[in-house]
Length: 224
Image 1 (cartoon, rainbow, N blue to C red):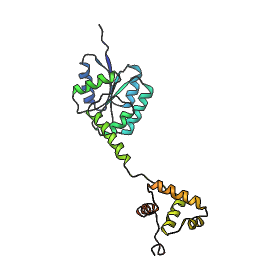
Image 2: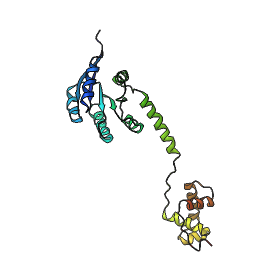
Image 3: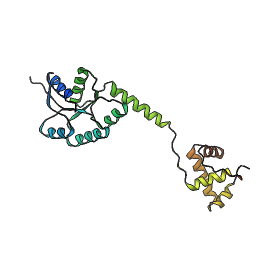
Image 4: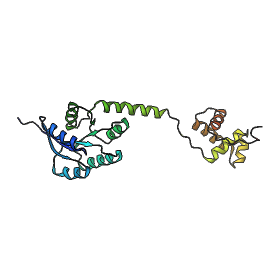
């Protein structure tokens, strides 16, 4: 009974690694390397003439470049499963490339068994969850958690800043309304909105925030 053979393409700028991979993988049962190319231009020339199940793709020199290549491959050859081979494996890069739909990220320091396991998973359109991929998931989860506690930027309009300044100068609501040519009810609404913006339940808390963020302009009269 004839078993399905997984066709592999290799795109890597390092000739020694590329030819070594081709020789080694071609000796594995069920694997066939149909081409190996040194650059992206040759890759896009070779793909239309070859059926490729799994493409082993180098990250080359630029992260932005490889992102563009992956997006183009996904658009033009959606049936091809991608495994990234790289000398550099920072979690941010791995996470970003996973979001583009690659099937795995394998450091070039990995052994042959890991590469073959990755190819087998990718050939079935399964994500190969090795250590670097799993760790990148944890990294992203922690980054999201940290970002949720990061200080948020609060934008205040000129009118809102003016009202805070007048509050600092001990002006009451009616005086503030007169100064900004508005109604008392409008001033009250803006004050309430300001408290919600800065996360305070009181005018004092609003003033403390404004002092901390240097929103209030000091003057001799305001210090008396």
